[in-house]
Amino acid sequence: MTGAVLALSRAQPLDWRRGLPLLAAAAAFVVLFWSPMVTLGRDWWSDPDAGHGLLLAPVAVYLAWKRGLVAGAKGQVVAGTLILLAAVLLRYVSGLAAELFTMRASMLGALFGLVVFYLGFRQLLHWWLPASLLVLSVPLPDVVLGSLALPLQLRASQMGAGLLEWRDVPVALSGNVIRLPGRSLFVTEACSGLRSLASLISLGLLIGGLWLRHPASRVLLLVAAIPVAMFLNGIRVFLTGFLVFYVNPKLGEGFMHVTEGWIIFVVAFAILGGIALLLTRAESWVGRRRA
Image (cartoon, rainbow, N blue to C red):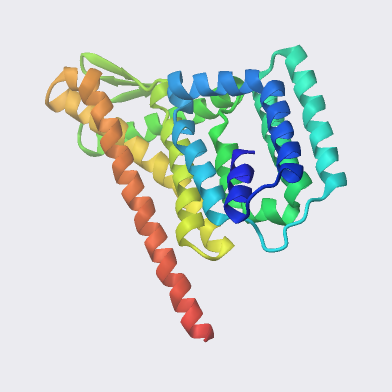
């Protein structure tokens, strides 16, 4: 809604006949979805798994303002009203069940419904990148996160143990526990790589939307973010075990462990940027061939 208001004000001054209903809709939106907005902001600030929302939401608003309005944008009242009614109904049902994810989903649905109501589906498609970033800024339910984290934990443990064996480190793997002589490393949910995967997918979407022109290239970049995140998380587990065994057991915890995670993420971001650069050059080459 903020992006729509900013884009409208940027395109043309609002007179009171057009601006007053828009302000009334914005006020009703805030009143109805105040609770989901507050809890979402609190999770962005305090939950490490949702912290990327602090970056994605402001970037989404800025991109919506930057892209502006589609020429001849016209509201679709019937379709927008149906989307709004469905979102309000979902908000009511999720409020009774106290289910945060569906409450936040209803908030996004109402936001998109307002865009369709005032500006039409063409405008929503024009804002596909800001809308996608807003969707990614909403954290998944704990049940889904848990079901995703466990396979990632096991995969990172297997990869880390395999690399340690390759470097002649005596190791025994039991689930997500890597046993070294005199010490055991636990690949916990926080070390599953799920946070870096979510962040890399968000960055891949942003980079693809800004740098790449063809949808196929954008999809390739998003798909590439998954193995990059998984591979580098396995490298992180390997480095932790290697440093613990050969250097100092304290390097597997505390500040050094967190620093390793940041370094690995920076490397992953650089790899993703390199893939985007290659895709950009591939698009240019295809364009020249067609010309």
